[in-house]
Length: 327
Ligand SMILES: NC(=O)c1ccc[n+]([C@@H]2O[C@H](COP(=O)([O-])OP(=O)(O)OC[C@H]3O[C@@H](n4cnc5c(N)ncnc54)[C@H](OP(=O)(O)O)[C@@H]3O)[C@@H](O)[C@H]2O)c1
Image 1 (tube, helix red, strand yellow):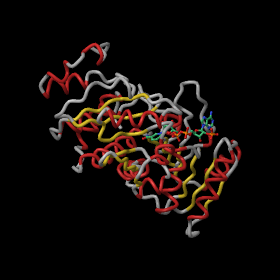
Image 2: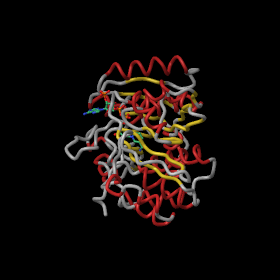
Image 3: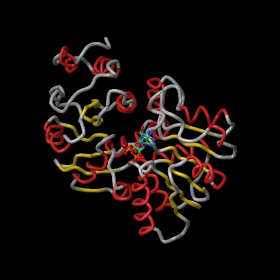
């Protein structure tokens, strides 16, 4: 079954009843489309998807389809590969293919922000878009990443960020989004570091221009001794680089520098947990990975599209089943 492609099935899925269709849809979790190869629309189905590159690994289809199914909504959700540099060409095709909204992931969040006609306050804060709702042919952009992250922190550790000294490793897309969010919502101190130092200093400049100096914001160099020296002054370490996605990736900091009560939040998720989360737990530091953030940003996207409360339990169960582990 896993080897079947939509093209091979032709219109069959649409001729099947709701349950059979949903079963097929769920049991083809690794199917990847392009904007050109999406199947014909069905008049009674609302259509969503996730765009990005690479996209084959995305767990969003299983989670979102479980949400639609739990509420009895006749909706489809496709994994759609859109390579870097092709977003402006992909958007008219996605609209023609009948998508009512989509999630947007690496590498398109920033460019999508620049292309939407309307920006929600969450997108303005993040300067990034991960959720699109199509409204009369126009794109309305939202960002649910920071709110998803915050809910994950609260649920796991009952932790609000306002009293925390936070160190963010990585000032790429997700690092910037979380830093902008913390600057607006408040924390006790914020430290930024990035391999390419210019990215961190530019972000610092931007945040300082926004901030009313309620708390200190600084950058430190991307080197082991600077990061180690910052750790005793840190309550929450946020790993926001892509280090840890690959097995051969090194830890972003030495194992021995991790000491409780430091908490570690790795934005990456992997089936077998990330090397940093495993190392931190080994050192008795509370540590979680980005699977909870993925769940919560996804339930928020679901609510933006449907206007209904997301069936969280069903979405979480499907996500955990696809990830092969609990959050
Ligand atoms: N859990 C979730 O829901 C969720 C949501 C969003 C993102 N994420 C995760 O967050 C990660 C980053 O995403 P992004 O959108 O921020 O990507 P991005 O914009 O491409 O940024 C990548 C970041 O990783 C750094 N980096 C890459 N390779 C490195 C290396 N070898 N050594 C040190 N730093 C390195 C980059 O530093 P330079 O600037 O020096 O290149 C940059 O800071 C992704 O892996 C993704 O899985 C998770």
